[in-house]
Length: 501
Image (cartoon, rainbow, N blue to C red):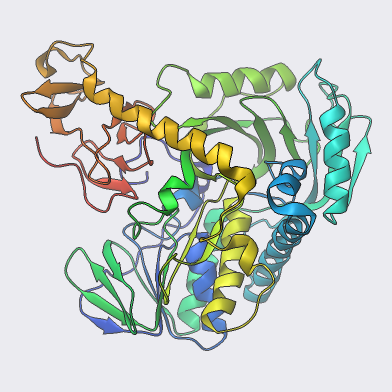
């Protein structure tokens, strides 16, 4: 099980668990990469292949963050739709978005072949359809926009599913899927073979821009480098700027056995709200149906049984599906203009970031590897302006305002009382935030009756955390920092944990 998480993904239980010695001394390298997920490891691998000396640091294990909590769709058909991308980034921007994501799938395929990585990489088609009874006009519009963007796609009378008629569907050709855990393990081995070093159980608390850059760990060790990359899902090196331009969402997934042949191998997405996405994975002799969706703002939806909703939705469409045997959740960063932020950290010269995966972490993470390699090595790349973290899109102003008004509203939690009189009144397996004098206390009573109390104030920007009963974590509803029951930080942007109460 991932540290600080209550659920375990299908990839975690079917992947090698890779840990490396923690950093134990000051070192010098050419490029220091913070984060051993797909973005960090792809960047490290592509740089190492060019002869660059790389060092990768991670507070957890290889692939132990959000890379291990995806459903691993490899798609150039983007969730926010090309009709929207055209409005935000223009026809040329939409074309570059389609091109870059298609190139990312190609790059994954090349790496798999070059390094001989056994990760079930497969090319297959993807189908977008609308919920029953809704107009298919959206599909017509998306077909026109996706075609303008250069994607190979067609309108079909239905998706190739046996148990239910989707009605008209938009087919995107040459998409893909793989096993992300085995893929990043293969990247890690290749990085080592190419002379790179990886240190896990090493938490970075500060990255200081300069010539050279200095990367400081919680143990006080310093990595001196020509350049540094923060590939930590959300940047732990920024306090304000990037976090005002993206919003954290929780997303959910289940995996259930289904008779082989009952579902045509493909990727499937609907346009519902909340939406759903589906694929298959072969585990030993068993075909597993993976169903994801039910997204909501982190720390802002604690009443809905998301796993039950996913299973109900799936069983209505695939009645032969067995009971869900694996279920997990993850965290997605949604940028206000629908594309990731990849490039130089705004206002800095030698520090780079990759964030804002927008539900396409596997392709955005691979785009990050390609683009950051080129930027660090001083090469031109036609994607640079599209993904520039300093960009501002006037067309995204309304979304920017909406998300930041939502963040501001979360500070009203300081005025709320607790539904329980005192921590002593908490039942086993329950939690609440209490006022104690001038302090806010986050209290959780575990199944054995032990009471755990920490400060409820997120150390990032002072928002009050909320209890996540799925993962048994304290989650910040402002910018998505997440903490274990003892206050240990699990996800940034916070770099320190919740204080002891």
